[in-house]
Image 1 (cartoon, rainbow, N blue to C red):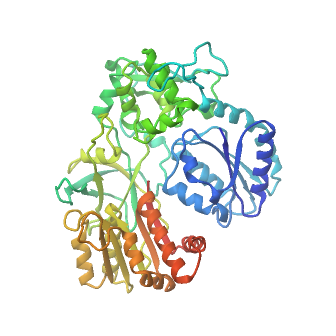
Image 2 (cartoon, rainbow, N blue to C red):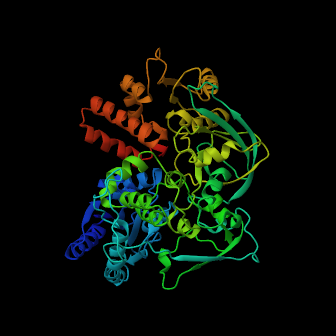
Image 3 (cartoon, one colour):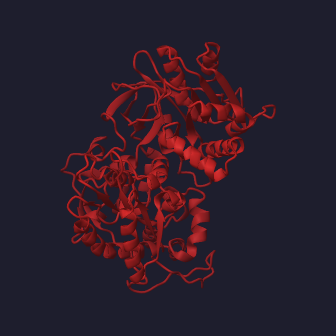
Length: 599
């Protein structure tokens, strides 16, 4: 398995160090792909399993190097969840923001649920980079080799006719057939006081927090789309908060797994379900290195607390987790099949059967009923349940905030897994219920009062733009605003259409274009069709210095809108597509093309 060796370098030092690591890795027989940050295929960082070594420096006031900036944006909008990684940072303590970006990158990957397999290090050019770099590289090879071996696991020969003709390698533990080692142990202790949510969670780092975690109250809930089966169920919730929000802000919600899902898991754990609420004293086995201990490790907690608040039971399973689940099966055929999925020979079937269908622990336990994992195995191999983020659509006069979300009923064959962990949780809440939230840092995605604005969103992605228009209206901002929206049907799921029409009549909204993908009579099906159809208008807006705001799905809307702009700029400015894309990247760096997109 090739290791990704990714560098971000402003002056060439990080690149030189990365090349040094690649050379030594080759001498040790390790396969390494050396690549500059912005030339990295981000899909590789989401591949499971994947090992990455980052060598990066800072520029300016702790900013990423120019050749890492685009990758940094992608890592923020669509962070990898199960990457095995380490970071070597280069800096100079003569500057105020010493090591700013390497530290930020390392923390972001941690917060996203990635596994830091080797300790972060920061070399200081003021005293000599080699003082840190040389010992760091020297000690890198053992943990790197171990993580590669752990991920590769078994090679299974195809001899037995078991759906995919597989045979589990048998025999004692050895380098070719390693068993999965659990690093945690526990005993029940009913003398300890139970944790009460969000105790324990408060000790975790909350990504991008700006302020404090607060217990907020749901003020109101309502559905804002038609009850037709043709459209998604979209809801608007209002929350009472003590924090001060403004247009463009977003917030994180501490979500919870459903009790029905938890009950299904409890019935298949190795531990007796009657101990679900018993307090566990969890210990780390001797000689386990600190970096291998899960960062969501909590003591004096119960099985239920872990399953409810701490573990992401909907995460796509890593191969090492599948290998562990295989060992928990009493049925030999189920054991062989899970082990096959965890092997290199099973990559195609793993993608087709598990990853493409988005199957998780609940589905696997249904598919393999003889599997009886232990709670400590789940703690070791499942990632932390991370907060989910929502854009504020409107701030009321009394300071409450509104936001919208889609809820999609599960129609999959393996029933316990429900798409949308947080939306399913939100759907259970009613007026007066409490929810834990925190304000998310936002330095960029805010109305620009000094420039004209182009606002582009589809589905719930239009919601923050209502706040933009509220701001322009209330503050009397003298600017031009163009809004481009997309949804399925004009009269069934056009979110905030009446409010947008109101602002159009008040001349707060200068231009309003809407695409409807399922309405046959509609001229434009998607927002990118509007961009292409009004090429001169949008190119002229760019030339005038307008700020573009894009909000929505990264793979769908984000990529399509960027591609459409690249096409019209290429056409009107006689550029190649590559030059037009570079032009847009420069607009991003200037803060004139801003995205709030999600995976």
